[in-house]
Length: 322
Image 1 (cartoon, helix red, strand yellow):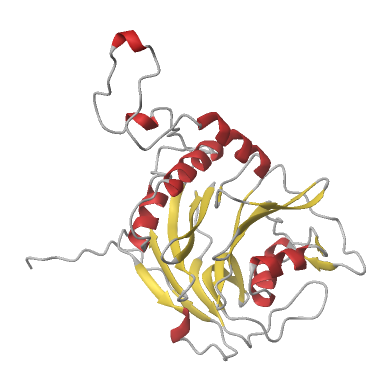
Image 2 (image 1 turned 120 degrees about the horizontal axis):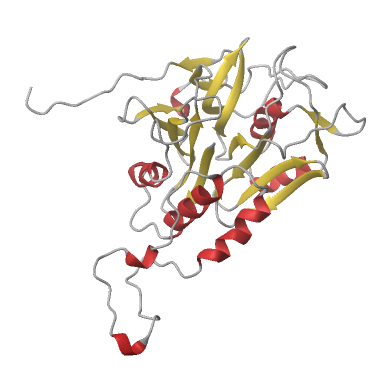
C-alpha cells in the first residue's frame, strides 16, 4: 500500500508515501559512484551514478524503496501482489536482474527516462531472492525525470513499460486500469460547480469545495490514485516541499483506519519528497511531523563507502516561548 508522485513546476519533485504495518529497518542511504554493486547474475557495477534514497541495509547492500541519482532520475518500487510475476531463471543475451536490483541498476546507469526505456527493452526480471529464505517482493516501479514519467510492470505476459501522464502510481490493479478509471471522475472540478441538475430549481452551492463531491476518500489503491491525481493536477502556486507533502498527506494512512487480515494496522511509515534538481532528500515519519533533509551533493560522491542516516523518529517541536 503506497502512493508515489512525480511533479514538475518551478522545481522537479518526486516522492512517495510508504504504507506498511511494520518497519524494514529503513534509513536514508547515499551510494557513492565507486561503491561496488553486486549482482546475482552478471558482473557487478563498479562505477555508476551516485544516488540517495530510503533503503533497508541488508549485508551492506542498499535495498532501496525509492531513490534519485545525481542526474535527477528518480525511481520507486510499490507493492503489486498477485500481478507481479518474474521469470524462473536467467536468459542468455538479456540483462537479467532481480527485482531488488532494478532500482540500483536503472539509477546507476541511466541519466533519463529515455535511457531507462532503452535499458528495459532488453531487461528480464528473475525470481531470485536477496538471500535464501527471503521472499521475492511483488513490485511494480515508477520512474520519472523532469520531462516524463513511466511505469514498469512484470506480469505473466512479460515486462510492460507504460507512459504515465498522471505522474502517480499506487498498487493493484495493473496500471492501465488506473488511467481508464480516471474517466469516471471527469465531472470533478476544483471550482464551484455549475447547476446541471435542473434549471428550474435555482440550485446553488452552499459551501466551498462542492465541485469535488465524489472524489474518493477511502484508502484503496484505485481511490488513492484518483485523489492524488486530482490534487496533483489542481495544485496551485509554487511547487515546494511543503506543497508536495500536503498532497501526500491527503492520501496517507492513519493508524487504525486500515487493518490487515492479520490484524495489523497499516500506517504511512514515512513520506518523502526528493528535490531531484538539487539532490535533496526530504522526509518525515509517522511519529515525527518535522521535515528532515539529507543533501546528496554534500557527500563524497567519488567515495567507496555507503553513508547511512538514521531516521529522526521522535517528535520534534520548535517551541517559540521557552
